[in-house]
Length: 225
View 1: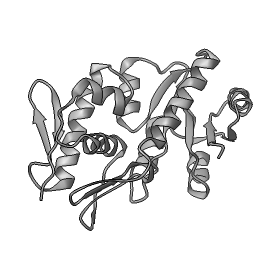
View 2: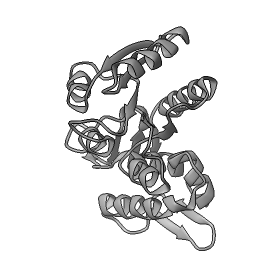
View 3: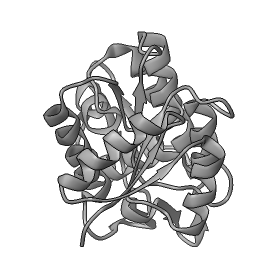
View 4: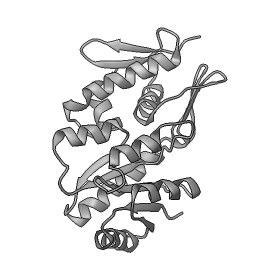
């Protein structure tokens, strides 16, 4: 099935050029001219991936991400931020910590952009069916995790981190690998975001011992009875 993409940009020419590039690559593409319109489209028909302009008149990318990743109905699909001027490390960290999958500067080579889109779609669908470990069940494709009958309220990065740890339960997963696989970058500035994800996991699991720190290496999921 062809992936559905949503391009969000308040500059019509830029949006249409990006959309046409993606259509030629075989994707079904819709365009939204504002953050508000993008959220309305998501509510009516969720895309498989969103390419989101950082700066728009009504709201910036972090605000759109807050709406997508927060609340009772979280939207787990990948979001790639496209930016012209806002590409300093601090802006990138803010976008990733708010739930962006990737961050691309406008004007990046077309083939690189298409490769990043393919990679984000691949990561979004990775893992196939749910992972079950004892009372813990994680369905990353649907953006859901449960402990017994209780649904865990997890943002995107903690959910993906839990999915990765559960897939290798009992094994110490290095911090560097978690950064690459979950945050899509080896940039050490995201380590604070990783620590916040671990804090959220432990808070939601409510029981000690599930997520264990392995000093000098990373983290391990320990299955509890």
